[in-house]
Structure formats: C-alpha cells, structure tokens
Length: 554
Image 1 (cartoon, rainbow, N blue to C red):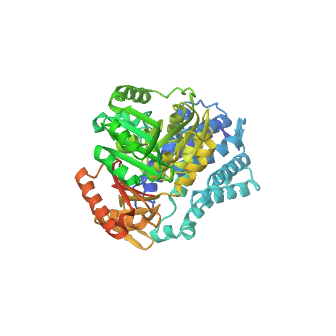
Image 2 (image 1 turned 90 degrees about the vertical axis):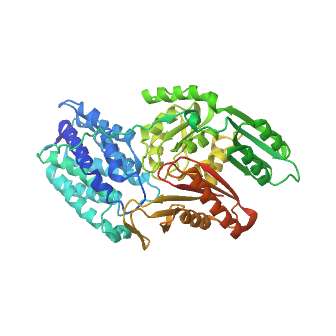
Image 3 (image 1 turned 90 degrees about the horizontal axis):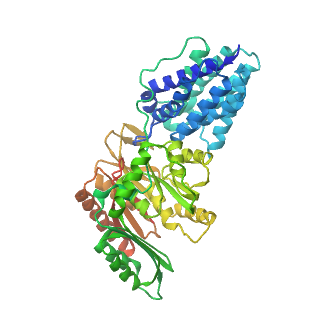
C-alpha cells in the first residue's frame, strides 16, 4: 500500500486539527511558571500556516507537492523553538518525498528520519527528553519496521507505539518533568500531529477541528520607525545623538549623564577610555551638544524631530498592516531588525538605529515570515537581526534561508542584550567586524527580568504559587516573593559584580510612573549604600507587557 497525495494531504490536515484541538492541554504541560509563548500554541499556529494551501489542493495532487506545500507553510509560519523543529521535521519529509507521485512506507520512514537529522542539526546543544528524542525514537521504530514490511499501516503503528513509549520516558530524562509529574510538551505536540496523520492512514478519516484553525492566527505588525508611531508618548521633541572624543583629563561621564537627565529623558551614556556615546530625548539639543563639548570634540551628531516624523511613519505602518512589504532597495551597507514590544522599548531601538521592529516577545513569538518581512523591508545589503528572546532565535535563523540579502542573526536573548549590541555597533567597521564585536558585547551585560507566576510549580526546589512575583537572572529563576520592589532589588543586587558600572531599569505597562519611580529610588539608595558611588542608575519607561521590570547591568 502506498501513500497517495490525497492521503498525505488529509493526514496533515487531520494532524493540524488534532494539535489545534489539544493546544491548551499541551500548553499546560509547560513546567516553567513564567508567562510564555507556549508550546501547544506555537506548534498549532505553525502547522495552521500550511492549512490554506493544503485545503485548496485537489484529490489528484502528488505526495511530493503536498509535502512541499506543508513544509513551506510551516517554515514561514514557524513560531518558537517547538514550531521551528516541527517545520524542520516536515522539511525533511518534503525532501525525502520530492518528485514522487505516491510514497511507500519505506519512503516515508526514510523521509522522516531525514527530518529528524535536520532538527537535531539546527539545535546547538540538543536536549534529550524533548521532541527531538521522541521524534528520533519514533522514526527509528518506523525505519526498523520498514525493513520487515512495506505496509504503511504497520509502519505507522510502530511509529506511534514507540512515540508514546518514548513520550512516557521523557520524565526519566529531564528531572524537571519528573518533579512536576508531566511529560515533555513539544514531544506531546509531535505525537498529537502524527496521531492525526495515523487516523487517515488507517482509514478512520480526518480528525475534525473543534475550532476555526485560522481564527486565532496572529499578525505581527512590522514598524519601520517605532518612534514615529507613538506621538502621544513623545514627551521631548528631539532625538539627539553624538559621540564625544574625550579631552585629556575631562570630567567623568557620570556628570554628563546627570546633566542630560536634567534636560531630557531616555538617556543612554556609554563610555570607554577614548569616547563617550550619547543618546537623549530633549527639547534643547543645542544644550546637549554644548555640554558635550566641555568633555571633548563631537562627531556622529544627529538630531531628529520625532513629532514631525509621526505622520510619515504612521502612514508607513498602516501600509505594512494592509499588505506584505515589497522588498526594499538595498541602499545602504548595513541595517537592523529587532524584536521588541512596548512603545518605549521600540522607540529606544529605533533611536539606536534599528530600521524595522517586529512586535513580539515572550508571550507572542513572531513567525519566521514576520521576521522575513521585516528583513525585506530593511533597505540594506546586510541585515542584522536581534531576536532578543531565546525562543525566537531559531525562527530568525530560518528567515536567513529565505531572504534576498545577507542576514546575520545575533544571539541576543533579552532586550538589554539587544540594546547593548546596538550601542556597540560602529558604522566605520565592516559587517563581519561588527558581528564579532556585537556578539562579544552580549556577554558583558547582565539581564534581570521581573514577572509573575502563571501556574503553581516547583523550580530548583523553590515552591511557586500562581501570582507570585518571580525574578530571573540571566535566564535563571532565582527570586520568588510577593513584594514587587523586593524582587527588583534582589535581582539587581545579584547581577552586580566588581566591574559593574551602569544599571538601567526599564519598567513595563503594568507599572505606573509613580510606582516605578518609588521602586527605582528604593533600589538606587540601597545599592548605593552597599556598593558606593561606582554605580550609575537610569530609569526608562519601556511600556513592555509581561515583565514588570527589565534590568540591565553592565
């Protein structure tokens, strides 16, 4: 018995329906209690992106064309690490079935094995006990059975049976799963999809969707100038930037920072032995320049009237919401795309030179296609992408293969890392030199995140209740409390080392200006007493969702 194009088409549609129907069940398996772009949601949205094309195919379609359409749709729609891995599994199936009008059981088993190999290759440090393990062991069982028989039902039965056994073994490979009493969520998602295919293979028909698979497909808005789309948030008119080439014996840069904060906001001051790099929003750019001149001579001066830009940028944003972007002409050497959420954070990235913002983050992982659209909208020969979240890096890397220009994905895992990378960029250096320097800079910033628990959990022997305030330090959950200010203080204190100089606190949309200022003052005073005058503090209204505070320590 062979798999026809119609059977494979119906099987993948059935698999999509099965994960869509069970996405909440899969989401609930996530043991980490922070708000997340959950696995079931990401996998269901990834495979849903292939449904329109599959549903339009006629019954005489070839198995090769079905596999190609599914793989292409999933690649472009891939969200989160689990979605990217799923797309790679189907990309392998597509390559293995390319050019075939129908497929034998042995063909399908070999094609899946090809996809598993590609998925493993995409992950720098594969973790066993995840979807990688379960897909590999299920694939190996299918290949072994295909050596005995070419009956597709028997081969798929072996695949599903071993997949279920492997899924049940995942807690033995990952202690966090065992402690929580659950199996791996990505592995469960994989098995649900292949059980949907199995239903069609053994003649039981398509699993019907209990939900409209397209109803909750999200569209991430790409803005080519985030600052221009938030006129009501612009307190000061002029975005002012320059570099001070230091005079011998000039005052400490902290004095320049203090002055700039007295005439504006969104102050960023970075200095080394030779230069001071300045960014400030102010109504008096002349005063900012005059003060800078007392420290040395100025270069790379830039002033932009953010309010004047508003109408033009709003029109661009509206056009991008209505249609896919036409690839921009490659007018400059280097451009930037950043993933961010929150008016203040987006505006800061734009001020630092980012051309295109992809709105998204922790609970809303953008797809590969969202990131690709932003790359194509960037008028540069080489485009740097800042994912700013570990669960978005793989999706960004998939966009590299689809772009019409050179793309470099920096491994930024947080907003503070992304900001530091942009501050390190030197327009006088080549793309390669900047890639090296910006990547190295990522290790020089400590990132603190303050959020809330969405579920009861146990992490590293810490008992967590839904609603607890959680403090993350460089990706590790270290603080659990009910007092938001105490968590902010503890996280910041833990990140400070002997070489720390600058501390930036970025507050989110769920924190009022007055509460943020009060918490910031508390942290600044306590840490100032503890560590002396070596630390500089800045408070920025980021407007980000999910995180009450993001902390950068350099």
